[in-house]
Amino acid sequence: MPIKVKEVKESAAEIKGMLRKEKNKIRRTRLQMLLFFKEEPKASYEKAGRILGYSKYQIARWWKSYEEGGIAKLMELKKIGRKKGYGQKVPDEAFERLRGEMLKGRIRTIKDAIEFIDREYRVRYSKTRMHVIMRVKLKAKKKSGRPYSVRKDPKKEEEFKKKL
Image (cartoon, rainbow, N blue to C red):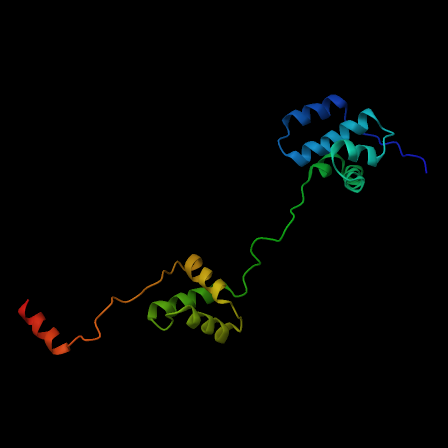
């Protein structure tokens, strides 16, 4: 199978100028690929890959995107990895109701909050996720009562308060 000639529309000077300005490593490598094919239009993807440190398949994908949409499409970077934030399972109004219930004292623990959302909206959150929601979204902090003695005598407490 004969090697296909790769025609780069931009001039070598334009590509070199873009290379000097580009800070992103992957985009720089893509521009180096264009410059390589500008200087050696009959070179194979495999040769370009060896020189640039990528597989021939990656070079072929980059070249295909260049052929489809030019340099703008080649310079597009796709986000990889999982998306941040899976989105909300329940509407914002649910969190406002949850906050109201917390202020009224009906919801005191993470377990209570999980049960409330499960009962009202039929959505089940883990303890960890509900903790994040309560801490970050609702800005709730852990509260604990002041410690008191188990040997406390209410009559003596009243007498003490009268003396003050």
